Image (cartoon, rainbow, N blue to C red; front, side, top):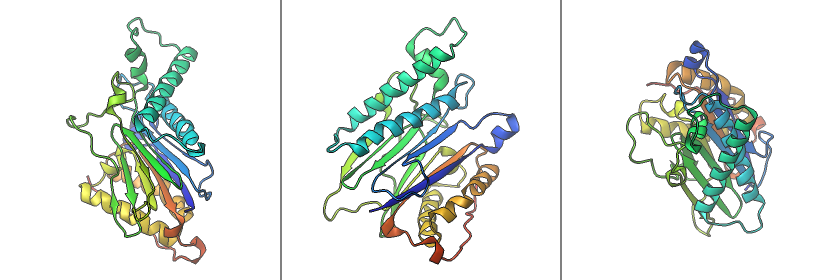
Length: 284
């Protein structure tokens, strides 16, 4: 299966009004959008918005870079490990090291920053990432945000269980002491007769919070899979910045980030597809 992917990240309407930066980050491998490949890595991260997380836009960027590097090695390995916990540990250690290096370059001028968690706190961020190879895939996540898989029969679902033990806007974070235990992750081998995704969508919670409920959000995933099949990925990506801006303006007001990957069996050539405009309704 040949995959193409790409995405966009847009500063939230409320962040624009308050003069805050986009605290989301996005990245994928291979780096060229819509370049066909047998395997890919996609990652998104959402930096926390509270005053204590004043470097979260850096933390989210580092999270995406670490996920790309770690899962990129997973793509290239002749026989990669199926130990999801070990992969999570590698991601987490690498992120903490990247934060330490950034702190060394840009020290925090504060006497109370003593413990390791206090050093990590300003960089607090979530992370969601997927790596797909011809023979297996890995999906991992800490904190909020959404990962959806789509299948040739039109089904769209979540490959990971929801977080537990949270209230309201709380979320788990890379900066926690027990972050390794707060990851949700699994490796799936491709077996004969087993349904295999031909569509992957990752988004930060600014997207899902802009829709009325879970059912409506899942329908957006199905609509995107259908739109990419009809229009081609490039046509959808050309409209993505505007659509995400509308989602934030009319919905959550938060930063909004979306990454899409489509397998070739579910993709029609863009130059033969009807130019269907896609702009789903948003509601809080």
